[in-house]
Every structure is written in structure tokens, then in C-alpha cells.
Amino acid sequence: MPRFDLFKGLRLIVVFFISTTGNAQDRYFDAPKAENDGWEIADVRSMDLDTTRLYHFFSQAKAGPNKLHSALLVKEGTLVIEEYFNGQQASEPHDMRSVSKSIRSLLLGIAIDKGYIDSIDDPISDYLGPLQARKNLDPRKKEITIRHLITMSTGWDCNDWDQSSKGQEDRVYKKSNWLQYTLDLPMINDPGTVSNYCSMGVILMSEIISQASGMSIDTFAQKYLFNPLGINNVQWGHTNDKPVIDSGKRLYMTSRDLAKIGLLVLQNGQWDGQQIVSREWIEASTSSKTKITNMNYGFLWWQIPFKHGDALYSSVVATGNGGQYIMIIPKLELVAVFTGNAYNSQEDKLPFAIVKDVFIPTFME
Image 1 (cartoon, helix red, strand yellow):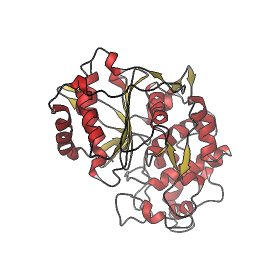
Image 2: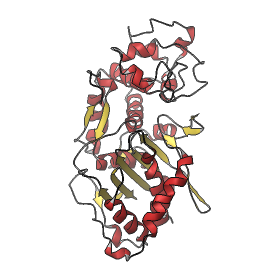
Image 3: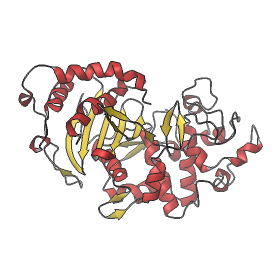
Image 4: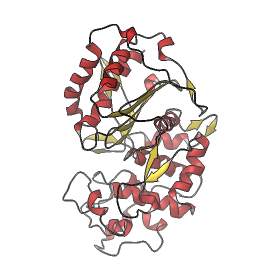
């Protein structure tokens, strides 16, 4: 979760990278490789740009120490930067953590487009069959809709950022039945009034997609999202030692494939001339619907502004613990992707400073 009060310290790191003395042209980084995976590629060195900041940053980043695993940049649909660090390989799927939530938002949009789900304003009880609340019965629970799940405003005592919350994800992971336990959580707010970061609600939304479509979430995703994008090197898993239901598993993806997700959103749901998810859903899900810790939040996507000089660049962002990010800047037609292993560390915010102080100044119009 990005917190902008961390930017000041992180910017010092970036300033060090880009202000190091030396000839930038001696600090080459490799152009992306053609892999027959649907990507158009280009060498950023052949573009009419001042690449000094890029050269200095990446040469220093490769020297370390840092907890970056990858940094990719797509400009106007073309992959122009692709770098890996600290032993990470391009073909190795990476744990996406909560970036999986934003991808699940796309799956929900597809489920609506395909007619499996009528409306996000339907009560969740309409889609869960016999799976209903058994404890802490409260009439307000009948008012909980899919919209409340994806804006994290169900009213349940569910807050991942509050260790005392009964629905805090690490607590729930110890339970034998995550879905039933979540439905049985006590209500502390009216639905739709307060948004708290609640992973369990997203898992329940995934189960709704699964039950409505008659497919496991991984099968649904492969059929309707990954296959059309040419994404095949995908895994679903979890760090929990116990067996995890399909709807509760996280995505493991390569950085190049993650960048395809970002480009799909930038292109308003289109890929190779095909509408994978409706433009209406992309516009709705990536626009602000609520606030979590005073930051704008849509349907499982963040809206985060970047300022450079007097210019303000809006962005749509998927975030995951440890430094997993998709950052989409429509004004510049940029998609930035990062992975890392800075779990539960402030260092996982470094990509925000890289975008602000390296990528935007290099590519801004």
C-alpha cells in the first residue's frame, strides 16, 4: 500500500542514482528481447530521448543493494525497458500478492459482460447458495452487495491493516473455512459507509464468479482473460501451509505478462482488436469510488497522482506487498511494472520514486 509520506526518503535514493558522476553512455542496459509472445519491442536508446536518468539509475540499481526483482516500461504499446535484478529471471512467475485483486476486478467485469453476474448491486446472498451467514446474524448482512466487496465497504469487522480486527487476513488464514468465517464476521458499520482494506471480501467475490460461472477462478481467468492475451505461464498459489481453496489463491505471473494486463487497461479493455473486457467496466473500475486511508480507490484499483514540476499525472495502480506494481499513466501512454521482495518493508515503495523521478521526466511530453 503506497504512502506518500515515504516519498521524501525514497527520493534521496533515486537522486543518488541519477546524480552519480560519469558518462551515461558507458552504462548500457539491454534492450528487451523478442520472445514471440505478442510484444512489440524497441530499444529506448534509439528513441529521441535524454536517457541519462535511465542509464544512471539502472547502472546503480544493478549494483545494488536493493530488493527490486524487475522493472519494465511500456510506451505507446511497445515494450522499451525490461530489467531484472537480484537473480530474478524473465521466465519465472512472481508472487503478485494483492496485484491479484486488481486482476480479479477484470475477471468480475468479464463475468458481468458474459452475463454470469447481473449487477454489482446484487446482494451477495443471491450468488452463494447454501453458503450464508450462520453467526453474528444481523439484518444489515442482507444488504451487502458485490459492490461493497469490491469497494471494501461491507461493514464487517475486516481490516487487514488492524491486527485486532477479527477479519484481518492473517487471522483468517488460520481458520479451516475462510468463506464461512468471513460471512460470520460481526458487523461494525452499515454497508457502503466505511471502506477498510479487506482481502477476504475479494476472495468471496472470486467465489461468486466461480459459482456463477460454474468454473474455478483459474479456469475462468485462463479462458476469458489469459488465453486472449497469450498468457500461459501462470500459477495460482498461496504462502499458507494448509490447503487453500481455489478462490483464495493468488496469482504468480511473469513481469512481461503483468505488463500485458496494464496495457489492456490502458487500451480500455481491448487487445489485438478484441474487446476482452468492456470499456464501461474499465472506466468504472479505475475511477474513484471510495477512499481507503484518504487515498482514492475504485473497484480494486488505486488512483494515485504523480507530480513533476507544475504538471500532475494521474495514474491507475495495482499494488502488492513486497513491491509488486502495475502503474498506468494514461496521459503519457505509459505502463510501468515492478516486482520485488521488500515484504512488509518501506523499501517496497521505491518504484513510486522511480516512476516520479526517472520514468516521467524521461518520457514526459
